[in-house]
Length: 217
Image (tube, rainbow, N blue to C red; front, side):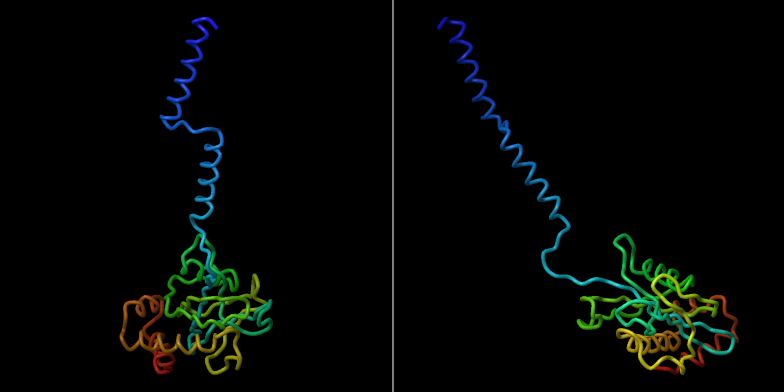
């Protein structure tokens, strides 16, 4: 072997050693790093333990000029197909609870409202036969207007408070009771939220609404 060949071999070895000492990864190491990165990305938002789904529900009181009624929808699918319930449904991944409540109200009844207030979270483990579901409940008082059952609601209808069906779906009987208790507190405390709900009503109408809702806790 001549001097040039020997020099080339030596320089090749030196370069290989330099590459290792500088941390240059081999092809196999690069693949491993790539796999580890993918694993980290996949697990970044993962949660290995069982966790509940979230829904929203709307207890909407409507005033027709003389009396207060409450809005219910007839469920078009299981569970509780054919039963009456409050408008609501599962929360989507890119919306807040209030946005979800407003969307479900509009999709199932065609009704929109400028103001809804969150009043309670219902979390009993067995409240929904499908799976573990928590629901965030909202209420409001609006001028009664025409509604129509849409989406997965067979029909939508206003009910007088003393004519509500005996059996509501899920835990919605309790939900109505809590809503009436909370709105009665709003009235007694004369809160800012109560004034916000009463915008658009005349003084005479407010008095009638208070007389119906203020004493029902």
